[in-house]
Length: 263
Image (tube, rainbow, N blue to C red; front, top):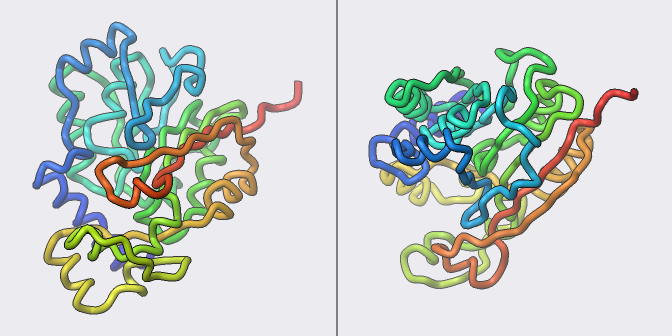
């Protein structure tokens, strides 16, 4: 992502916080209280809670990276469960939501601002778990993300990731949003910044909408495998609020493991 695109998306997510987008709304005190009792549910994709067998056996004391996952949601819940949490995000206001919950609830967590493709602020082999809900659609290059995830995980560490079905990007989203019409328009790979007209890009800016990029299965699953991960779980899902979900899965979740060192 060039600096202009990164800065634009950072500012758009700051704007989402100001407008109360659902993915920027801090969790309630009741949710934190339940997490302290070991009762919690987190999403990688819409309407599909991460299953018990995708989590490490014991999150207490686990070093967790919530990657591109600010907003006062996943990070504080995992901290309340007992994990040592670092939240990494491009948006200062998203990170502020995590600090807000931490201060409100007496939790300890670390926040780091940056680009998900560059985790140089984080040490090699310093995490047991990465939680990376759908967010790499806001980044043009995912292969560096997977390489960095592999680097910062310890051997045996787990990567939980959510990502968009690239096929949804062939559709004309303006016609879906404005008229409820499904129409194929774009060729893949897709990027707002190259596929939309100047007027459409101006509309996105006026409406405060972040730029997105499609990523193929080669980049998402193949990229994880190329980085060295072993795939151990996969799930498809549908965002029921979107018309295109009536026709195809719109989102996917994957579980991958950094192989342990030979015994």
